[in-house]
Each structure stands twice: as C-alpha cells, then as structure tokens.
Image 1: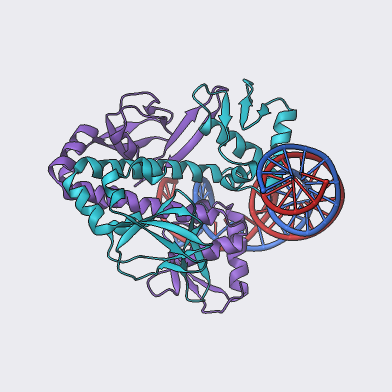
Image 2: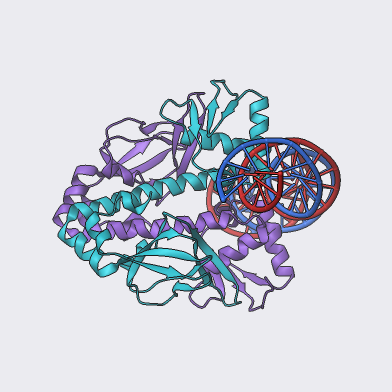
Length: 202
Length: 202
DNA sequence: CGGCGTTTTGAGAGAGCTCAACATCGGTGG
DNA sequence: CCACCGATGTTGAGCTCTCTCAAAACGCCG
C-alpha cells in the first residue's frame, strides 16, 4: 500500500524529502511529533531501548512503507527511528496533513480507510505466523494471496523476499517449494506459482 | 483497545447486540456491508475458503476485539465471519457510524487515531514473531510491555494466555521463565514480573 | 473435600535453523 | 565476446530448539 495510492497529490506536493546516512536518527523517542514519513529507499527501523541498554526493534520499514502515522494524533514520538542503511524518506508535515484533512473530509476518510485495510492485512499476517509448519504456512499464503482466478499466485519480489515475509529462512522456503512441486501441489514458472486444483484432506 | 474506549456513547447507544450459536455465520464473503462489530463474548473467526475447499483463517477475535472496521469503506465483506463458540457481538450500523463521523469530525479522528495505534501495535507483534528463540521473544515482550518504571511487567491474564500471545506453547513459556529466573534475569511475583537490571551482551 | 484449570517438570521426536558447497543468472568491464 | 563478480537460487548434513505427549503438583471455588 504505497502512499502514492492514497495520499492526495495536494499533500504530496507539500511534502519534502530528506536523506539519511546509515545509523542516522530520523526522530527519537520523546521528540515532538512534526511529521509522518514514507520510505522512498533504504531501510528505517523503529526501535525502543530498554533499561538494560538493549534495543527492541518494533518494525523495520522498507521502500513504500509509511511510518509514524500515529504521530498525527500524538504529541511525542514513542520510539526511535534509525536508518538501517542509507535512506531517503518523504516527509509529510503533521500540521499540513491535519489541516488538509480538516479542509477535505474525503481525504481524511481515505486515510482512515487505508489504516483499516492495513489493520486487516497485519492481522492476517499474524495469523499466518501462528502456523508452524512451513508447508502449511505457505499454503495459507497461497490461499490469502491468490490471484483473482484463485489458481495462481504472482510473486512480487525474489524468493528471498518471500521467505522473509513468511518468516522462514530462504533454504526452508526453497525446500518447501520443491517439495510441493514434487507432490504436484504447485507448478512454478517465472515469477508465478500455479496452484493445482487438488482436494486436500485437512 | 476495547471499543468502549473510543466509540462515543452516542454511537454505542445506537448499536444493538446479536447472539450467535457456535458455527453460525455473522456474515459471508460477498455480503453487502451493513455494520462492523465488537465481540462481547465468545470467539469469532474471520476466514476465507480457497478453491480446494480449505479454510484459511485470517483472524480470531475474542472479547473486546472489533472486526470488520474496513467494511465501513468497502461495499462487500471480503471474508466469512463464523462464531467459533457461542458468542455475543455488538453491532455498529455502518450508516449510523458514518453519518456520526460526518456530523462530528472529532469522532472520526478518534476512530482514525485508534486504527493508527492498532497498526503500530500489530507491527510490533509481527516483529516479535520474527524472533525465533523463546528466550529472546520473551525479552522483547518485556522490553515492549514494561511498566512506566521499566523494571517490571504486569501480567494481565494467565501465563497460558501470555503463551498464546507470544506464539509459544505454555510448556515452552514455563520453561523459559524458569530459566530466566534461575539465571537471575527476572524475579516472579504474583501477577507481575520484575526485571533485574542486568547488562546483557547482545 | 473434590474437581477443574493452571502451573511444572520429564522425555522424546520432528522440523526448521545453521553452516557449507555449488549452480544459476544478470550485469560490468576489459 | 568472454571472464568476472555479486546476488539469487538449490541441495546436503547435522544440530538445536521447540513441540508433543505424559504425568504430577498446585491453587481456587463450590
């Protein structure tokens, strides 16, 4: 759900970009909230540091992700945002976004709708992680991400990316895919996976 | 994030309750969206059925959870909602909620803020599930859920509940807790866990 | 006291992780 | 055009950790 899909051109026009070196902080916990952000490139991790000095990562955002949406409704950031690699972020000023929402309720509603959809997707993702078996987790992924015809899944990135999204090592994913193909459950082609219409026993 | 914390009394007053028998459907994929819901008691699972006839669970909601918030912005439900056990749900009519939002932008903003916070929490939860080791997952949980003093964590439910939230078996959790206590990293008391200020090597 | 759910501890097995080697593919530059 | 290089993809072998199945102690409530 890239920001460009729902952020009105008017708001985007009023945004700016900022470049971060690896390790540089975008904001720190306790800072006054001034904006929320969209990652253009690179990685930014949201983390909190506990008393023992250890860092607990809350989220790692990559290109296309937005972070700190909640800052629109909170006076302070509640965690640190650190560039994990050289990164470019688009900065959406809190004041401007909020006033745009006030001017145009349709815009505000679009934002809300996006958040509601995100909640939905994230919950699905958590449910997926409750599945231990690599094979079943993959099947769940196929069911949820099947194309309109329900017979295939289009892969967006590399298999390594998919492995990360599934919470598996890439080796485990390769083996599982190979296993599913051997058993005839799927058929792999370039950038796509065809699902065989097999009746499974649950 | 129980609905009562953010749903204005005005809206709640206009809501109604519905009772579901185990296995009964609250709505089906493709149905016209008429409301979103709050689970009062029991369990409701959101699921989709794939071509092979298998059911892929998207989410299991329990008491206090809200479901189908995204239905406010979509003409059709995109999955089935089935009561997993006898359940009671509070029904918030889409038309009424939307008109309340239109009348009172503050209300709409409160709703948006809640969703933004949920997105935040869900992302954190996913990050937690990326941690394999039971011990580290527990440490992450402690860091994120520490009380204001940062030296203790208050347990809301039973340890079994905690195990479920962490995505561990209760046995694994018990063992891990025992291990952490043996090593002096935590100290357990009734309903609370004290974190020892130890410097960890990462 | 009796019963039920939670908490604990034990032993064993399986699944995915780790480490390692190699194949493949696409791009780069001589 | 070919050699080189890095990242992705693939397969093998062993190990660790959590899950599973089992049994028992504990605590709460009627």
